[in-house]
Length: 299
Image (cartoon, rainbow, N blue to C red; front, side, top):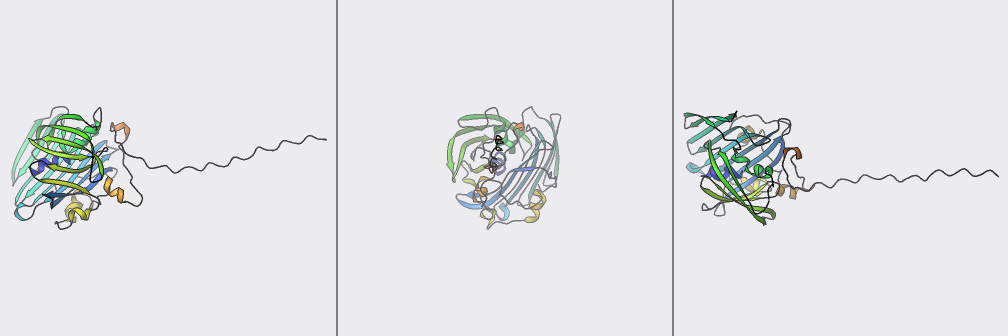
């Protein structure tokens, strides 16, 4: 249930990151249960211009003791969001699950390990099916982009069980959430409903799992999400390559002394992301020289 909530909004495996990948979004969100902090999520989206691939990486930690949940995902898709591969892991108490999935020629091949038991899966993937973690980018890439009062029907792979599920996203009017202009989106996926608050360039500002009393809120500083929670730099370095700073998002950039700097996906990738551009420094115009004086007529 918890994974279902975070799959669409947003392994301790060593799938290498491309050094050229451009970070589109990176941030820390605190997880709240009835307004009390119970954990955090670290999420990063990247685009590899050389390979023409999107990458999604996230790490989630919530609860304590026997109810503690640790979850991570590293997913790769083409620039058209066709699945390439993903690696998923979860640990709840002493129960563990990992999924290693590869996609080729319209077929998913996956190895699922649950508490040591191995299951192999070979499944045909209908055209247009994508990894659920990339839902926001699918909406941005749609014909009309992300806009108010629209409905998106889709089928996506739920990474936590390697199953294809149908979903629906209803986009409401723009409103303000935690000081940021956002679209309020009602998502239905795997028979669960939750609200997402997304700004016009695809950043998840907050979520609300309806009926569960669980919410998330993006924060400007990592400490705002992780203070009082267990935190492993070693795990994060293995998953992300380094401990994420969480500064590639609208809230962190608003606090930056140099002001916000927005990353925009290249136009040729078919994504329209509304983001203010930095004001260019005016180039000084040289003062024109006066024309040379005409020769005086000889007397």
